[in-house]
Structures are given as C-alpha cells and as structure tokens.
Length: 246
Image 1 (cartoon, rainbow, N blue to C red):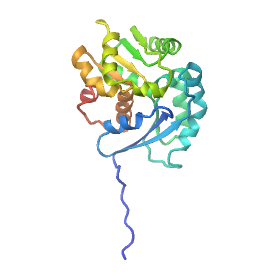
Image 2: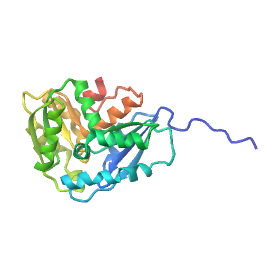
Image 3: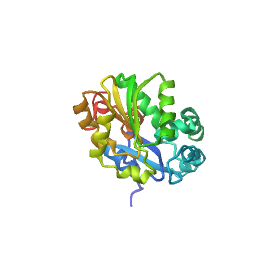
Image 4: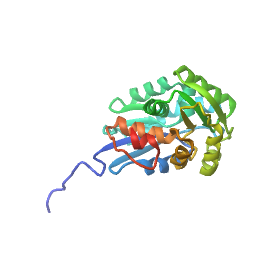
C-alpha cells in the first residue's frame, strides 16, 4: 500500500470565517450563495439575547472570543475573520471589535460587517445615503451617528422596529423591495439595507434596476469585502453593481 498522499485541500483559493449572531439563521445560506467556487467558509456563533436592543447588541462583546474559539482551533490558514453584525459593530464600537479579532487571530485579517459597508460605499462613490433598517429608533439613531461621523449625509433613515432576529429573517424579499423603494430619496447616492438578518441579497439587483442607483445590503457588502481582503477579485453577476463592477 502506498503512503497516504496530501494536497492543499478542497479550498485552495481562500478561507473566510464569519462570526454571526446566533439567532440569525439565514446568514450561512446567503454567504454560501454568493461565494465563488473554491472559497471555503466557516461560521462561528456569537450569543445574543432574543430581543434586539441597544443593550443586547452591546452584550455581544462578551461572546466574541467564545465564537472565535468555536472555529477550528489553532487553524492558521483562515485568510479573513469577520464579525458579521451591522448594529453590533457600531453599538460595541467598530474599531474595538476589529482590534479584538486581530489580537485573538493575528494570522488572519480582521474585519467587521461595517468595514464591508464602508468599503462598498466608497467603491460605488456614495456619500448621501438612504438607509432602510430592521431596527428600532434607539438603534437607528446610533447608526445615523456612525455614518455621519464617517462623513456621510443621511438623507433618509427608516426602521421596521422588528423585535428579534427570527422576525427579521421572516420578512419577505418582496416587502423589503417595497420598503427600500419607500425609503429612497432622489438626492441619495445609494440605498443601504441595514441588517444581516434581512433577506436583502435577493432584491438588490431588482432594486438597482428600479431605482437607477447602487443598492448595498449588509451581507452582500460583507461577503464582497471579505473576498477582496482575501485576494479573490471575481466579478460576479446577480448580486448588484458592487459584485459586478468592483
């Protein structure tokens, strides 16, 4: 019998790990649907109380290391580790989250979902934003403050005030399409659908065709950004201008 032979494994191009909210069940499916062939994905779960509030989002900070530990222990070939929660990033503090990930996984590039959104908005040249969210007013005001502090003008911001991630997961893509159209304003450079628990990926291309401007969704921006950080520059149709042109 010949000795066992080994090669680079089934995912030679890149490996990306997402730390997702434990209650948001659709993230894995959305990310796998957008991933090009040959890109390996891993997922860790960050515990969060059922209700989506400023406090429950802030409390996720304590679960980040636990979620990191749930990834393959000691694995050093993960190219990018990303905390995949929009609101959690700006509530906890985007720089704080990224620094924690970088310290815990020094061999990987650390990122947050908000980093992806910022990179996506820069790529499409958007400064004036219409933002459609899943959140209540308290969380929305923190989001407005974050984007304004980053140099954006928020021309419109409306939230659905949904109570928890399970409810957010159940919002139909057709309703999200109607909601984003209602939130858009003629002077907005782009529409951002904010929340990784919403099924926005399914309607981005349709919205862009209707509105005639870029539409960015949380999971779309996060996946695109992580791919680019990992050196995967495929142009992919079906997920909006961001994937197709940048």
